[in-house]
Image (cartoon, rainbow, N blue to C red; front, side, top):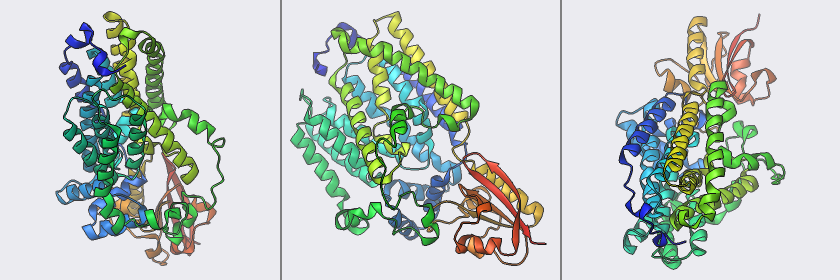
Amino acid sequence: MDDNELTTTETRTAGFPWLGFLVLLLAGIGLRWLAAGKSFWLDELHSTELAHADLRGMYELLKPDFHAPLFFGLANLLDKLGLIGHDLRLLPALASLLALWPLTALLRQARLGGEALIAAAAVFLLAPYQIRYGVELRPYAFLQLVTLWMLWAAFGTRASTRTRLLVFALAAAAGLYSHYLAAVAILAIGALRLVTPGGGRLPFWKLLLAGTLGVLLFAPWIVEVESWMYRDPEVLLRDERQDPSAAEHSAVPEKIEATFGYHAADLRDLPARCFAPGLSSLGKGGFWLAGGGLGLVAILLILGLPQALFLRGRRSGLAAWGLVGSGLVAIAITAVLCVKIWNRLPIQYFATGAFFWAGLAGIAVQGFAPGRWRRAASVLVVLAALLAGLGEAIGLPREDLEGAARAAVELARKEDAHLSAILRQPGHYASVEVYRVYAPEVPRLEPAAVPRDGRKVVVLTRSTALERQTLPEELIGAIASGRRIAARQDFAGGISVYLYEPLP
């Protein structure tokens, strides 16, 4: 059904729920503030290092990592303006909150009622996925923001053709400069738009033209930095850009042999993880809150979606289904790429489609009978999303690098020991960045720089058991030479702190 066919008195006269949106926005800000206090995980330390470097240093760090520059360049600017550490999380938080604008604008064009809009906004602002990646110091909130603007341009009808063409082209370019997976969003939106009716939307050929313009705006970065995209695309399957000392920790296997069957459990859980990405890592309290919220939202979808689909007077417009459909198509494309190229399913890569939960929530609430049933469903969605988001915000951090760093610093002071770290990461990043972020005043040494002087050493590790002594000589040699492990303390997310003492 075309959006313009939805001309019921109910959808025409329903006022926009400004007060409800304001309350939800404040709740979203509050949960992001709570979540922003949790420890960084390893990839966020890479972001702080990129932000703290000078522009040339940032450029050199970006090149071997296949990273686009926009998000990290903005983080670098904020660092130079005085925002450091967790304060830099303001950047993704703003992007995640601003994404509500195109999402709501698109759903309003689908003529969803006020209760349905509230439900969609609640899931989008408060779901654990949105909280986690709404504060993570990585480009995924930016990726979602530009994806939603592309969706608004492709499936919306309320602006001029010229405006929508310009928005799609600029959003596509900004997306590619934020994260290369923006190409998945462009492909998914184009594929879905190709098979959907017009009804005042951009013709497919114009959408294709706008997408091409966005790619051309991105071309200078491809030519200058990422020429492998057209010269040697198989580099994604190789490990040649990793430092030899970190080769054994590569996330890319030497030989891709995985099948979809091998990843069946991960693929089965993928839709749920796009709502709540890390239930098992949140701790008992966070698990029950986030899991309970997810379950309640799922029940409401099961009850409401059949009515929205089959009761003609309550069906939503094409804009809402375009949002849901393109999100699901993007998730499917990303899943294929993840399994066949990287042999894993990093849930953050699905930011180009995870918002489908918000669209489904709005459509499902619209499916309930008008009046108290629809209001009750909307209130339950809000409460469920709030519970789930609270579980994410107060749950355990993904990796407790902050707690481990502070414990390591205290132990080093107590034992008069050298301070170092060995993190499972590419070799071009500093191992001791964790101390620069959480204890900048404390002297720290890269593993290879630890003196062989018989003094004790405190080492923070990530996903690395030093008892096995399987690390390359350049990483562990200086630390283990003439020393033995005397103590170990473990923290959330596979983080440990070791104390080495001189051999007797």
